[in-house]
Every structure is written in C-alpha cells, then in structure tokens.
Length: 395
Length: 242
Image: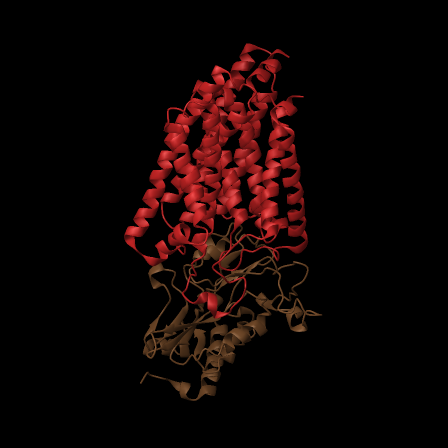
C-alpha cells in the first residue's frame, strides 16, 4: 500500500495520539466553554491564536511555491507543486479551526459573512480566506481531477490554472499582509503597532511554507535518492536560505530600532521575549532552530546539497516559526495598558503571565494531528507524486 | 485651594446632577454629550464605585467595568499613594469600534460606546485595541462557584442596555466582551450611573457637557482637567480633575 510506504506505523501512532488528545480538548472546550482556558483579561489571546497564524502562514507560503510554478513557470519546483497545493489546502482550514474554538460564541461565526465590518481587518481577512479556499479548490480540481479530452481542453485547463493561481497569489499576499496588519494597526499595543508586521507576515509565510515543503519532500517523497529529488531539495534549500537571511534582517530591524528608541512600552515586551521566563522560545526556537541551524546547514558545503540535512533545516525553521508566532501574540499583551491595572481588582485572569492550559494544548495538538491525518489521506488519494501524475494521465 | 462649586454640600451635587440629567433627557439624544468627571483630589480609593458597579451589573470575576488603580509613589519615608478610577472612557474616536469584525460595538448617537451581546462573537480583538484596558471578556465564571450554591446575587438578572439578562449556560453575556456603558439603561430612566450615586467622597460627577449650566460643564470650566493618553487622539469623555 502506497500509504504504508510513505507513512510508517509511527506516523499513524502520532496521528492517533494527537487526535485523541484533540478530541478530549475539544470536548472540554465544548462542555466548559472558556473556563478551562488560561488566557485572560490582559493576555486575551494565547496558544490558539498563535497556532492559527502559524497554520495560515504555512498555507500562504506553500501556495506561493505552487504559484512560482503555475504562474511564473519556474520549472525546477514543478515536482513539488501538487504537494504545495495539498499542504496549502489542509493547513488553512486547520488554522481556522484554531481560531474558531477561540471565539467566545463559536456558533456565531456566520456573523462574519452576514454582517461583516468592511473596516475591520479581521472580517476582511475571513473573506480573503474564503475567496482563497474557493480558488484553491478550483485549482486542485483542475490539476488533479479534471480529465482533458483534447489538447485544446488541456491548454485551456492550463490557462485556467495559471489565471486562478495568479488570483490565489494575490489573495495569499493580501491575507498574510492583513494578518500582519491586524496586529500592526493596534495603536494601543506599542509592540505591535507599526508598518513592519504586514511585510514580516508575508515573508515569514514564505519562509515557513518553503521550509515545510522541504521537510516533507525530504522525508516523505518516494523519489528520495534520485537526482531530480536532490536537485529540487538543493533549490528549495537555496530559496530557504535567502528567505531566512531576510527574516534575520527583519528581526534585527524590529528589535534594534525598538531598543534604540528606549521607549519603555515598546521595549518591555521585547525584554520579556529576550530575557523573560520563556527566553528559550526566542533564543533556542527562533534564533537557534530558525536562524543559526538553517544558515549553518544551508551554507556548509558538506550539508547544503544533502536532501536530508536540507529537510532538517526546513523542520527547524517550521518549529522556529511556531516559536515566532507565540512571541508575536503573547508578550505584546503582557504589558498592562495602564500601570497598576493588574493590581486594581486582583483576579487570576488579570495577570501578565500565561501558560496555556491542558485544554488549549490538547486542542492545538489535536489540530496538528488533524493536519497530519488529512495530509496522509490526501497524499495517498491525490496524485501528489510525479509518477502518480503519470498514472492518472495515462489512466 | 481648588475651586469647589456647590459640592461643599454633598447632597446638592447629586440633586443638581439629577436635574442636569432631566434637562439632558429632554433634548434629542444626538444633542447630549455625556461626560464623567473624576476629582482625583477627593478619591480615597474606597472602591465604592467598583462595588456599586458590580452590584448593578452583576459582573463576574475578572469582568470589571470600573476599577480604582492604586499606586505607591516615592520611596520611604516620602511615600504617598495615588488613585486613579478607570471606567470606560467612551472615546469620541474609539479604537475598539473599527476593529470589531461584525459591527457588534459602536458609538451610539449619545456618544456612548455600546455592545450588542447577541451579535458579539467573542473574538476579543476590541480588547487588544482599547488603550485603557476597559474591556473584559466574560469567561463564564462565578465568585461562588466552589461553594454549595451559586449565590443568588450572581444569578440575578441584569438590565444592561435595558434588556433583562441572566447569566447561565454560556448564553450571552457569557462569551462576550463587556464594558462600562455609563449605565445608559439607568440614564434613560432618569437615574445617574451607579458609580456616581455611590461615590463616598463625591469624587465622581456625571452630566451633559453640551449643557453649559450642568455641573460637569462648570467643573471643567473652572478646574484644571486632563484625560488619559491624550496623545493617542482617542478623545476620551472621562475627565480627571487634579
């Protein structure tokens, strides 16, 4: 069985365990509402929001790789374009699942469609996600399922994919930019407020999308060992290196400017990130796994052409991006809007410290499990692998 | 010695504000400009405002429409405490409104920022946008939850926005973002906001700034006042006298 070959038993064990945890977390969420959550009145967003922007970033970033092929004819990435579409299709809904459980009234999500505010970035984002999902499903249908009867039909199909991919590319840039703007416009949160976030979000989506595809292609592709596989991996590695270096520059720019200004409300959240109780999220996660490790592996001549090491670099960057998402959402909220506010009427909910509760962890882990399960199913059902593509076109 | 108008006779201030309120209610809603004035020189941080608000709105733990921030300034032996009561500022340019994805919160024609509990999806984006920490999320908790019975004062209905609501079974306002609304439902019945009525030191005043004869207009004319975070341009309608 194809699935067995690509996905060992251990993979399915991980899927089963994470899904089981997710089921428990989801049950708790539905039965107890938000009472079992550890975010509060000050740190109002937590693990679920970070997980949501993490997954949505992957969706956008991997779609960019597909668009490089379908819109700009960058042939070197063609072998992974179908894989990129599959990853994009899975991670967006899974990301949205995280933000759905985060709502105080999950049953009212339809209000976002019925009475959206056109000046709210959040509702604009939801509409962009929806439009993108429709476009993405159309592309996947054309790429994977439509059987062209004639050459003319094949040509028109390719043109449709090209046009839809171009639209999709615009949509992912818009929704990732909006994703950053959602934080950037918050003038009340000096650590968020500014023009860098939309760009940072677009960039880090491309970083994580490329990195995850490199990780998946390195470890799951049945083409492993072939020259073509190695070449695709080397190219992905080069792209990833360039993007990671840009992310280093962005991060340096963000932090150095804030520290040079020495405005307490701007640097306090950064100090929390750098030296607070969760310092390792930045130093080991973002810097170690997301900058040092990939740069070393992708520059060093003994590893930069080895698919497995490029894949390791990719997985490091994926974990680092998750760390970055946590650091974007949480520390900026840990600074009370007014000094002394947290002691005014003491409550466990009004605090500057936040560690996700088991319910939050279980739900977030469950959504990772769901993504893994959907990926394995999609990988075996859809002609993601190039040779399977051939089978389909001949069949 | 700060200028103190009729306030030397405490009852008169309340009576006068009631009369101001009555006059304001005779005008069109859009012609009223409700403001709160808080005299920091008279606040003793007794938290009567916090408690009266709790009693009026039956707010659960963590949900505080008005609080008194207490801070120690200086080092021993030159220490003093400063107090800052903080209700919702009812900003003229409220940053919390535009961010709402479903138009569940808006500045009404009287200038009060209100929330429609039946529309709010509980995303809490408005809480991140408020520069004053004036919004709270109702997690569905109770003060008496680990006792044999949830105390009746917690399950009694509130009449926020003139609607009778009982907190139960995760129905709104549980799962919603909540905030001070200047007791708009009381105003429309000719009553002053609960915190104004119950302020022990008569440090809080309320009225229509569009009425030059109102007590709040007089105080703001005669006394030095400031607002919180003026640099943000939010134009709060809570003024502090110092």
